[in-house]
Amino acid sequence: MSKKYSEDISLFICCILKRLDAFKFDNFEERMKNQKYYYLAQIFQVAPKFNYNLYIKGPYSPDLSDTIFEFHRKEEKIPTDAFVIDDLEFNFRLLKSYIKEKSVRDLELVTTLYWLIKDAKMNYAEALSELKRVKVPSELELGRAELLLEELKNELKKIKEIK
Image (tube, rainbow, N blue to C red; front, top):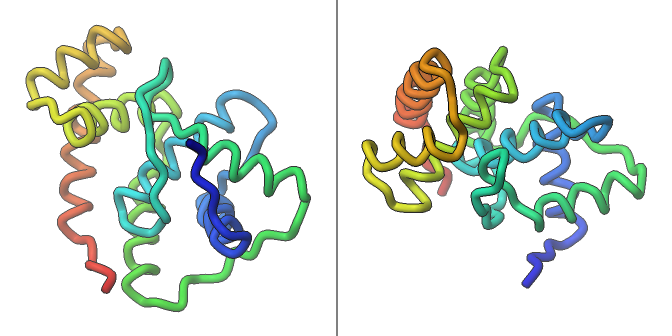
């Protein structure tokens, strides 16, 4: 069943992507970046939840795609103002700092590894083994994914709970 949000919440969802310099649809890489950025926005507690499944290029939400494509088709102006709630803005800045200068492949690997551990409930060794099986990363990519996961965990320790 497809998840439908109100117009206001859909606008908020698109605003988050726009503030992350995403919400672009020119090519597959840009659309994939939308998915990975939003998945991380949920982890950083700055975005409404969508269900994600593991697809070829990592965690993917068809409902998110539907929501943002629908808004994209309307060609409405999307605001990029800072969040009013300070804790939400703090978390958003942590997220923006985390994704800075990471390639789409980096995002694909780290979000997949995170999804395998958190959503698929695998232990670390199982998740690494599955990541190797489904993503076939080079040793360098695998090492980088592990470092990025540690960086992500460290950033999440700084998160301010939004009441």
